[in-house]
Each structure stands twice: as structure tokens, then as C-alpha cells.
Image (tube, rainbow, N blue to C red):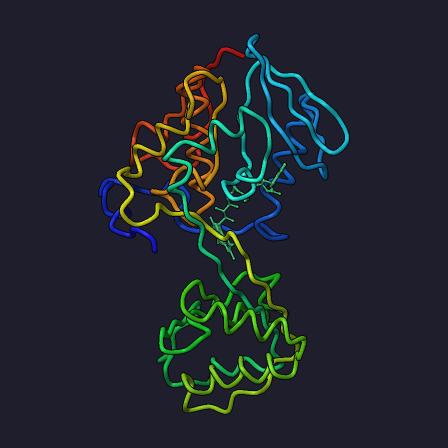
Length: 298
Ligand SMILES: Cc1cc2nc3c(=O)[nH]c(=O)nc-3n(C[C@H](O)[C@H](O)[C@H](O)COP(=O)(O)OP(=O)(O)OC[C@H]3O[C@@H](n4cnc5c(N)ncnc54)[C@H](O)[C@@H]3O)c2cc1C
């Protein structure tokens, strides 16, 4: 059970990422481009090898073991999400895992089904009343939310996110996906749409592709004594003995389920521990263009 009242504890919360913008190639372009940018500035990236343990002895230097190498560091900014971090061994990882704040972070699973159509049936429905449909939701239906991207490169293929559910229907979608029966999945998508778009004939989607995102996003568990701000501050240095910060959406529940949570959490750590300054963090009316860092110890 999650504590959604915590979404209300920061009424000044604004977003510098509105209106939503999606990169060509999808959200994964963010890490790919950030990595490319970092590498071009001399950063070394070891992708594709999980961190297995984080240890430290009395000299407080860290020993990080991956499947392929051992890295020694004098400080760590960890961007591994909480569920995966919970599986990491070593005394430093364990000290963080043992904090009450870490244990109160709870993930939610989300099922999505993308569907491509031969026919933009929704555009013929009177429900639209001449408007462009970008998304439609019906919590009585297992599809829950359908998103119709309007960007030229997706619109041409009639691609939609035809189911988007992090509630009671996740298990239903999981069962359908695990059954491996694509016809059943296509029919379930069609039937859900038909019950909403009653004035048009909904065809079977041409192609469907579904996925259950197990640790889709994080919130605080119900009855947690902490609020969002407590977690954000805790994450800058969860255990005073160790110079380790936790950054990511998981550690900034005020912005749960948004990339912005990860970006803001990173900026907080860079500001509070490493002397960066991000004007968009200070002034709520500033947008993304004002997020560039100003000065740092590096
Ligand atoms: C279906 C879905 C749709 C979404 N849509 C949007 C959207 O439209 N807009 C938006 O802003 N946000 C969206 N989000 C949220 C967005 O994806 C997250 O907020 C964002 O990915 C969080 O970034 P992060 O870096 O905190 O965590 P993650 O992206 O989860 O990164 C954690 C990383 O840690 C790595 N890792 C795990 N274990 C280890 C290990 N042992 N060693 C090393 N690395 C490890 C993982 O591989 C992963 O790359 C969506 C999320 C989902 C699930």
C-alpha cells in the first residue's frame, strides 16, 4: 500500500519539463545522449556490467565490484534504482539498505501494450467533437489509458500506447502476455476500445507489443514517518559515515513516475555536495533552458 497523500505535501511543486517533449527514438535517448556527451568529455562508461557489491574498510575508500572489474573510489553517486540496489552486496550497500528511509521506498508495476492500427478509427468517433485525440482514459476498462502520439514520425505508423495500467489490471495483462497468445491480446485491446468508442467499429490492431515494467516507479509506503522532502534530503547522504549519494526518481518521490524526479534529484546532490548551481531549482518560474549548471568544484 502506498501513501499518495505525500503527493500533496509540496503544493509549490512545478515542472520545468512541461509541456512534455519526447525525443525521436523514445525516452532511452536521454541516457544514450547523456552518456555520449559524458564520454566526449573524457568520462569512462562501463555499460552492460552490473554492480555486484559496494564495500569499504576503515580508510573509507570504496571498493565496487562488477562482473568484470573492481573499481576503487573515494566517493559514489549511485543512480541504481532502489529495488536493484537492494540486491547489491557489501557493507556499504547494506548500511544504506538498512535505513528506514530506504526500506520505505515502494515500487509500483505498470503494464503497457503498444498497438499499431491500419485504421485511425478513433478519428471517426463523435466523442472527439472535432478535436484531436491525444489520450483517453477509462478506469472501468483494463486498458485504463490510451495514448495517441501526435508526433509526425509516430503518427505515420498509427502507433498508440493502447493500454497503460499501474492499477488493478496489471496481473490481467501479465497473464495475457505470459500466455504468448497474441490473438487474445489483440482481441482484448480491440474489445476495450469498442466498449469506449461505441459509435464506430473498432478493428483488430495490426500489431501489439506488451510489457510489464516491474519497478516502473517509486513512492513512499503507507504509514511512512517520512515525507517527500525528508527522502530527498536523506538521499544526498543516506549514511553519514559513507560519502555515497543516491540519485534517481526512486529517491525523489515528489516527482514519482517522471524523469524529472531523476533529473531534480541529481541536481540536488550536485548542488548540495559538489557546489553546482542550477537556477531552475531556485526559481520555480524558470524552465529547462535555465537548468544549465553554473560553477562547480570540478
Ligand atoms: C512505462 C513507463 C512510461 C514512462 N513514461 C514517462 C514519460 O512519458 N515521461 C517521463 O518523464 N517519465 C516517464 N517514465 C518514468 C521514467 O522512465 C523514469 O522516471 C526514469 O527512467 C527514472 O530514471 P532513473 O535514472 O531514476 O532510474 P532508471 O531509469 O530505472 O535507471 C536505473 C538504472 O540502474 C541500472 N541498474 C540496475 N541494477 C544495476 C546494477 N546492479 N548495476 C548497475 N546498474 C544497475 C538499470 O539498468 C537502469 O539503467 C516512464 C516509466 C515507465 C515505466
